[in-house]
Length: 214
Length: 115
Image (cartoon, rainbow over all chains, first blue to last red; front, side, top):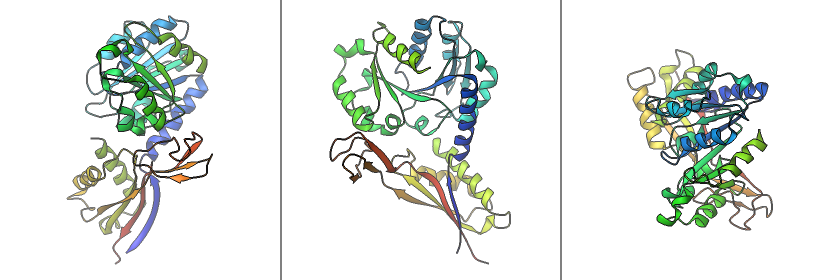
C-alpha cells in the first residue's frame, strides 16, 4: 500500500484560531481566563463574585458558554458588564472558532479581564485552547476529593485550582486536604485557592491574584 | 459527542491530503491517541465510520495507535509511566518534570490501495 505521511494534530485548526485570538488579546491588553468545571460547581457564582469584588475598578467582559439557554448571560448582565452568550446546541465544550466569532460583540480595547465560562464538563474542554492566558479549574467540595484523579487532563492543563463551597465542608464527605493532595499529585504547579461564593470567604484572595496577573 | 467533531476534523485532514481521485483508494487512516488525550478510541472509530459510510471513503478504516503516558523528571532523570497521568515524579517526588508523551491526538498517516 502507498503510505502518505500526515503527522497533523487533529485539533490543528482549533489551535490556529486560538493563536489568532491570543494575538488579539495581546494587542488589546486583555488578560483572559478560561473557567472550566463540572456543571454546578459554581462558575457563574464565581463570575458574579469577581465582578462584585472589582466593582468597576477592572474592566471585565464575560463570555458564557452553555449547551442551552442564555440564563447565565442574564444573570451576569444584571451586573452591567458586557456579556456574550454562546449556545453550543449540544456541543460539550467551547471551541476557538465560537469564541473568535463572539469577540465581534465585545470591545476588547475596553476589556482588562475577559472571563470565558466554559460549558460545565470536566472532560472535553480540557483539550481545546481558546487563546486564554490560563485555565482556571473550579471544583466544589460536594463533588468529592477524588475528582482530580478521575479527570486528570483538566488538572494538568490548568494553572489554577479554585475549590468552591468550602462553607459546606462540615456537611459533606470531602477531605479538602486529600483533594488538594490529589490535585497537586496530578499537577504540582497548580495554584490553589479555597473559597465560598456563598459566604465570600477566600474570594478576595483569588481576585487579588487575578489582578496581579492582569 | 466530542468524538464526532474530532472525526470531522480528521475527515477534513484526509480530504486535504489526497486528490479527489485518490479518496476512494484510502484504506486506512492511522490516528495516534495519547493515554490522557481524553479521547475514547472506540467512539472515534464509530464516529468516523458513521460519517464516511456511503461516501468515497467507504472502505477507509481507522486504525488507532495508543501512545502511553510518559513523564521525565528533571531532578532524578527518571522516565516513568503511571496509570493515572501525574506530573509529580513517582520516583523522587520531584515537581520539576515534563511530559514526554500521552497528550497526542494526531493523524499519523494514510494508507492507499495501489493501482
